[in-house]
Amino acid sequence: MKALKKGTSKHLFRENQIPSVDGLSLILKRYENFLNVATRAQNTRRGYRRAVRDLCIFTGLLPVNIESDQILDYLNFIRDKKKLSWQKIKWDVAGIKHYYRYMEHDEDMAAQIPYPKEQKTLPKILSREELVSLFDSCSNNKHRVMFRLLYSAGLRRMELLNLKIEDIDTKDGKFRIRVNNGKGGKDRYTVLSKKIHKELQDYYRKCYPKVYLFNGRLKGQPMSPQGLRYALKAAIKRSGIIKEVNLHILRHCFASHALEDGMSIKTLQHLMGHSSINTTLVYLHISDIPLRNAFSPLDNLYE
Image (cartoon, rainbow, N blue to C red; front, side, top):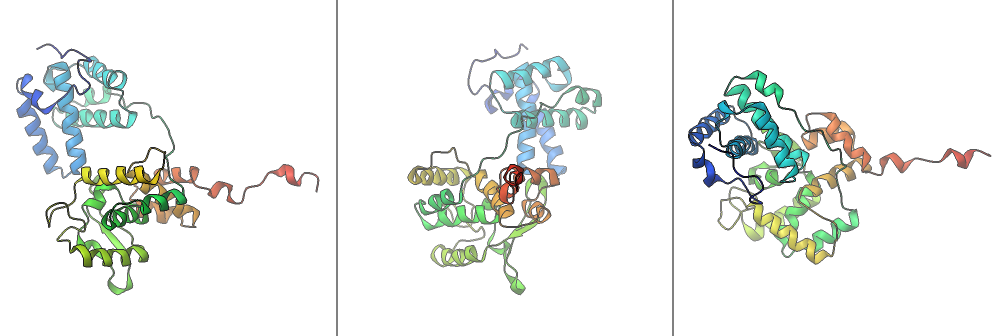
């Protein structure tokens, strides 16, 4: 079967194209079963499956029949034609390498697939004044509490949406939040602001959520990621902030501002759920800490 014509659509690869590659549906089902047993995080399972799906639809072949140069063609295509970032391409590479290593038991093929060169960029953040403006621009108190909780605890989007009422822990004078099945399937605790705790109590008395801390349209079901993004977009528009803002920026703001206020880098690493301290050290470059006690030696040259 011939590969699909390149560049024919902005969204070239779709789920309904799976039948165009004979046997692909069965391959993907087997891979899904393996990933489920491996208990990888939901986003990882979804991303790895999509990577294999897209590669096969691009080439028109099953993985066992794909050559290494065809994989390179695919990676170049999603970089140059689809303009995907190196982070997203890295996801594809990780998924494809994982498939060949564990499903085809082809270590040689996995070793031939290169990771993209990292494009090092510093995280973007909002100023403290911009954060206050964002919070004050929320259309309802529920959204305001959600955004303030994201910022105050350094949560990821899905970690917030998956929070259950029982995850707010204030027993024995503790103020902390249990994060279940965070990135990489890891559990951790992060800090619970006493101000946010009071706001959550007020929110609970007004909304009476069930099971999940923030319900969607149905009680007992979590709010959708789309609903949260829509609420943020509306608040940004009302605030007049002209920066490009997404939900993850609130997590970056937490890390940068926590360092500025004196939190140790090791404590921050734990609260953020970073496996490597190097990931956390990035926030030193976007905080004011390096300049807080800095001076120019020229000012003392003649004294």
